[in-house]
Image (tube, rainbow, N blue to C red; front, side, top):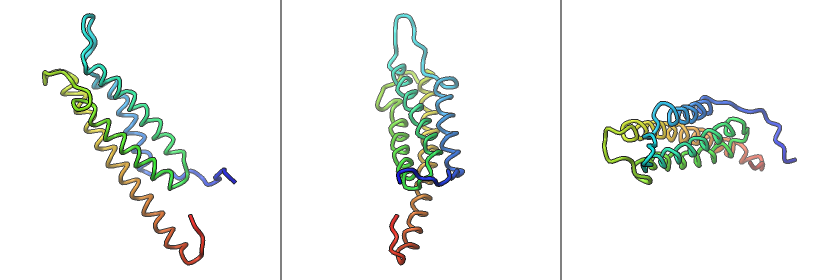
Length: 151
């Protein structure tokens, strides 16, 4: 049977991942947006903001799906992939896509800092969640070793 009828297991880290990704999306669009586009010029930080918005939506969707999945192996795999996406997101402003040269611009002192703080938090939470699930699965594997059952 392909359908797993186990109930959804909701943990604190699941909720923290969802909150962190939602907060990041809200912050990148409303609290700490990149420099505004003027009539005569589009700054490179505008494109960084667009990419960060797309990445934040991706992380929010993955976090929501992560909450709904009952399988611990899938959750651990999603945690690892979401942590990788968060690493890339933290590198986007100023490294992958350049920002304004002036340190007084909103993209430098707002967007970039917000991204690094939230993505480092996200990486820590996702890594802890993956570690918890992998430890749980390792314990199950050792328990079942004598019975001949496999995961």
